[in-house]
Length: 414
Image 1 (cartoon, rainbow, N blue to C red):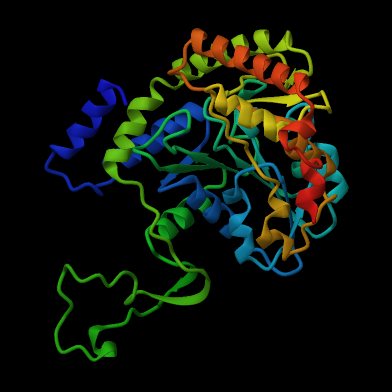
Image 2 (cartoon, one colour; image 1 turned 180 degrees about the vertical axis):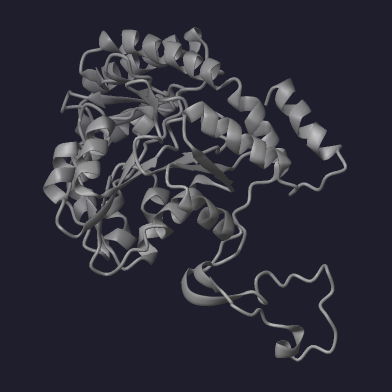
């Protein structure tokens, strides 16, 4: 955090308001809605909670189907495990690592209710086409924008092309709200009260106003309720249907104050990421067997949360390369294991071969290099040189002499 973030947080801590006052939360919601160009925004405790509420709003039934991407963090699809809907994993585009609209179309049936897409690494790949496809068919489009703070397509922000955008302010994201935080952006005004009620432990339910409210006598009370009693709507409403129980998913005021402060610097932070990513592109373009991922179409803005590249040399063992880079001082985190091959999704029909492009890319070819505004061009040059050295090391030594075995896709498939 910078000094202005600390000052914003301290102003809340030193005020006479309690830390769940909501003043800064409301202001952060408005500032964020204005920034992305959304008519509505609701802050929550994490992007996972945002995705949970987004999926709950669909009110999925057993005959419904939802299409999503296999190359994403598990939180994208986790809320679907609690629904009776059928989840279908479409394949990704090799050039963007995001959902391939053609594969989405191949998976659409008359039962398709929603598509959930992730803007992998901060690139909104295929978003304009996905928006058109879902809009024409009356299918909900949920955008997982956890990586996409600052991203745009054709001049319009991520999170505004679909019905709901879900955002993350985790400490590793482009801005943060004290380690965790999330936001929902959406167009439908009826969702506003539902999201706000559910994040505050109230059930997502349908209530009807009683013609004559209950009196205290109906509850066997001998005295009138005290003013501070939390009666909620007990006297005035009946419940017709409970859709889902409520969540305690509130964002605190100190967190929102830091979010407001960092939001003012978001464009400059993304610009720093862009310059570093461009430098990596220049360096990696000259390394044999390496291909950078297509960052964007002309006029689009990439948020550059992650820096991804692909290995085109099939003789290179990707996992060994990751170990060699670690040995040379470059921390490697591989994002993300294909969701449909996790145990909980194998239980629901996930299997090898379901998304061949995503599987080939993750098991054999995908690498992520560190990317952060705190890095320098010297750091970037060091990483590029380390990659070149690691590739040279592997090419100079037979794989079998280093203990390598069969390609990972076969061994992991068993």
